[in-house]
Image (cartoon, rainbow, N blue to C red; front, side, top):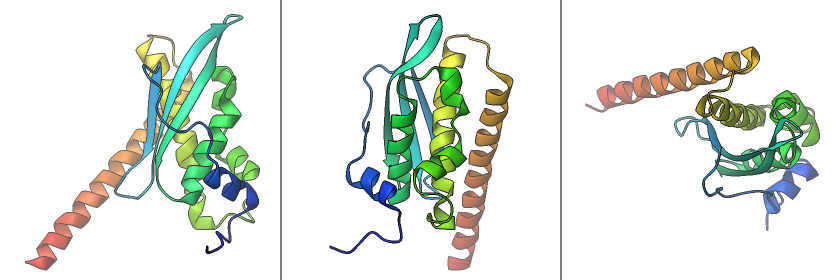
Length: 171
């Protein structure tokens, strides 16, 4: 079997033995980031419980359509946030994921976007939970949601333009 280099050990570990993959039946929230047009898509499912007046992620699962690094990011993210409050989970960002998976110096630059997508999918799931339950949405989460949606729109627009151009060239 070909070695999965140049990836760090932590990426290989999560790729070969992913944690918390699949769907949650009747989730309290779902978040998705990425786009099939760009290649990687991550979906996060959450179960939320209240403990000591805080909303806690009691269960989290992920689905991924993507590469080795996309799978590893989703696996790592789910292990990092399970049991945390929504507020604490929102503090986990792409840089923390990158560091936990081996650091910028070891992850190929073209794969850094996988950490962004994993973080975005989590943020979208938490946004979905707040929205669904008519809870006040933290300002920073609202800003993140708008950025994520704008990015998805831009990718879809560029993909549509590319397809139209390609069809014109093939005529």
